[in-house]
Every structure is written in structure tokens, then in C-alpha cells.
Length: 386
Image 1: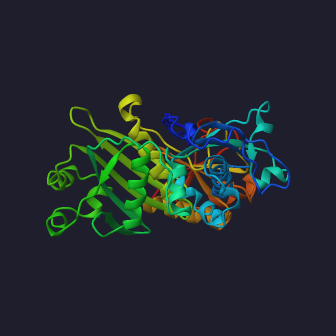
Image 2 (image 1 turned 90 degrees about the horizontal axis):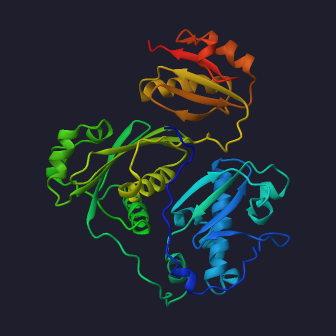
């Protein structure tokens, strides 16, 4: 089943609503005129965006965080540390998802500067922040933090076995490696009531396990390491950097008495992959952890422009990199729209379809696909590795 930017968002408690509520919707100082913002729930804010790219998403994070903190942290609007906090908005995000624009309610929402300057609102992004956000920020603004209800965390640890392939360099996350990555997972874990721990990767671990054993799911080697830790719940992640603006990640989650479940994601950043996978994991007991794909640029609410190019038979990371490099010699704006086992769809915006078709038809490693196998307006080729 295909979904675009589909994140399962857990319902938040109302602890913050009963604490420091101002009774008024906050007015953003960055806007030249007053804007009425709609806070969807206590930690969730909707923002109109011009597209689903990272620039608009980061702007939405900034606006949404400012909205919540002006409401819940006294004096935040005039605080000298306001910009410093908002510039790190993405680090406070628990989850996000895109929805269609509803013309009836659109004028009630926050909007990024691009939309306010006249760009069409392509989507609404719903940004969710964790419970306890106001207390967390208050700790950075004043010596005495706010007093809020504590977050109830399942104390049963989840052993996280993560490996990364970044431009061919492979490494395991744990011990002293990837401290920032570990800290981000722990932060997202707390926000989702999960308690992560990581292998120490001492000599005994590393004598058995290598990064490729996790990246390519060598179960017996993974099990040999995991059995050293008194941890029944397990999460493994294999993360591949496909290009400067695309990551593929494969996640597996196991608990005693249940079959292993998995999810495959294609996201623009590692942080999006973590937010998505951990959000899915936290809801797995109630909703299932079915295989999904998150598309960097795609889905029901996405306004497609340019030319879609479908390439079948991409069987490896090396194949993907060769095809992407080939396409970017024709149009350097090409991005990965979707990545699946059967085919990868790219999207080009700077060159028209006839130019791309002619250029790809001259490539000896590509052969055209039948027209009836393609979506309307899409170009299609089959890749054959030499």
C-alpha cells in the first residue's frame, strides 16, 4: 500500500492545555499583518505550504513552533533567545503529515512566507510537537523549569540496532559512534513513550557483527549480538543515502510472541525517517506495522509539475546512483519522487518530455517501456546493468 508522507500521529494528553493557557490565539511577530492561526490540538499546528520540499517544511516548523510557544511559554515573543530556539524547530518536531487544502478553512491557518507572497497553497502540513514541549523550552530560557505532568514511558527497553551506508561508508550506530543520532532517537523515544538503548559495540560485538550484516539483514549475526542484551523488544534499521536529497531506510520491529513487522521509507532526510519510523513503531501494537513507503515528493495532496520518468529493473544502490547521475546530466533538477522494489520514479522540471525521451533513448542501458504500462504523461524505461 502506497502512502505519501503518511505518519501515524498519536493522540496527545491535555496536560499542557491546563497549564499556562492564555485563552487567546497567539499573533506571530514575523508577519506584517495579524494572522489568525488554528491550533488543531494542544501540540499540533496546521500551516499552509507552497510545496512539500524541505525549505517550505522547515518554514512551517518555525511558524508552528513559534505559535505553540507564544501560547504556552509566558513572555516567549519578547525573549532574546526566541530566534535561537526557533532556528532549531526541526529538533522539537515529533511527527508531521500533509493533507489537502480546504478552501473553507484555509484563511484560518498559518501560512509560509511564500504563500503569503502569492504562491498557491499546494498542501497543509500538520506539525506535531511532543507533550512537555513548553517545559523543555522553559528549561533553556530560565533557571526554573515549568512543572508539568511527567510523560509515562514504557520502561521495557527497545534495543536499537542501526547501520548506515552513506556514500559507500558503512558504520553501526552505538557505543561511541553516532552520539547525536542516538540522542535524537532517545528524544523521539521519550516523546513516543519508548525507551531505546543501543549496543555497546565492544570487541565481543564487533567480532560477530559488521555494518553490512544489518544493512543486508543477516539475521543470524544480528541475533548473536542481540542475545547478549536482556532486551525482548528490538528495532533494526538499515539506512542508505541515495543522493543529497533522498534516503532509503528499512526498519524491522519485533516483540515476543509476534511476527516480525517491517516498514520501508524513502525520505528527504534522516530525521524524517526517524520521526516516521518511531511514530509507526509506537503505534504498532494498536494499528499494525505494515509495510509502507513514504515518498519524498508524491501522494494525493502533492501538486506534480514537470516530467515523471519511470525506470524499472533498478536492482541495487549502484544501479540507482548510475541512473540518477544519467538523468542529472540531462536535467540537474531531477529528484526522486518514489522508490519501490519494482520501479523508481524520478521527476524533472527544467527540461521538457521530448528532450528527456530523446536523450534517454540514446542510452544503451535503457530500453523504452510499453506506453500502456505507464501513468498518463509519464516516460518509462527499463534499465539493464552491463
